[in-house]
Length: 425
Ligand SMILES: *Cc1c(COP(=O)(O)O)cnc(C)c1O
Image (cartoon, rainbow, N blue to C red; front, side, top):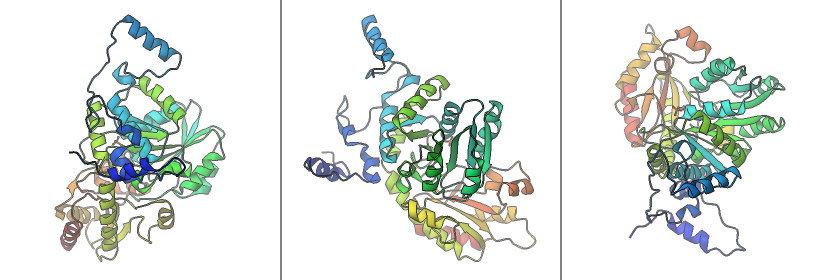
């Protein structure tokens, strides 16, 4: 006898009579089940989504092939596969589940977060157009705008996060995209989504995009504020186990359809097995994120009063510049806490900070975030090693900065670990 978690909720909703308004399911329930119609039995009556690990699909005979091609030519939707780069049922099921979670029409999966970012920008921006992005953003997104897009004759302007006057002033007649992260990496700045959406809506040709990797749909749903597209590196919280790479974009059906067409040309598609693992990870998304939110808040409060910590960056703290806006638009403040180790007289801050990181025993030293394992890094050495301290400072990365991406380990164990490691600084 298989008992589905949260099944009672679904039965209750289905029983309600037509006249009665159905209560929308909470993200925790959606993460486990997707949409209710997804509960229709699949071909083997298996509970889980079947893994269709195939590169191509076969036709019974020429008539079968021609019927498919006719349907495709006239815009009909043939309920079958053609070739792996144009779609896969396992991948499709996960796309629908993520669209539901983000409260969007549709979603499109990619093999990495960066392929999602680059495909979206390449597909929407014509030569001669202009993109605006906020600072304190994922380094490779910035590099893509400043090098690749530049080479294609697409200009970009970087504006300071939180400066909406500068953002409006940067808009040109050829601006097509405003892209921001929220929360950002590594300072967890939070964009005012209402304001951003409003600015975008005042210019009908501009699409607003939020990379919401750090938030997850459990903590924040940017589409509900009027943002046009949401992007995630599903490598992080959505899959949640540090074992696959994936990316996803969610938005209005027509836009996602157009992006799907260009994905078929650009060629970056998610492997079905990775999609299958992503779906498994999604089922525990709410549990994981709630635990990560809780521990991160406790850790941030603990660090803020610790004498060996110079500054803590966490949107759940009243001291964070975006605390008010985060409180208004987020259900939780996320699992990443950034902080600066107080300087030790006569010692290079790079070394002091490294001593602290090396003294921690639970978190592993690795790039990435959002998985069940806590990860810790010194951004100056992990992502910006080749730059000098002065160069790093010009882009806001201090040598004593630590980014702590909290996993699902016991909160008390993490606090004890921080306590003993800071005693060694
Ligand atoms: C990791 C990350 C990306 C890139 O995603 P990949 O899956 O590593 O390609 C983009 N944006 C943010 C905010 C990220 O954290």
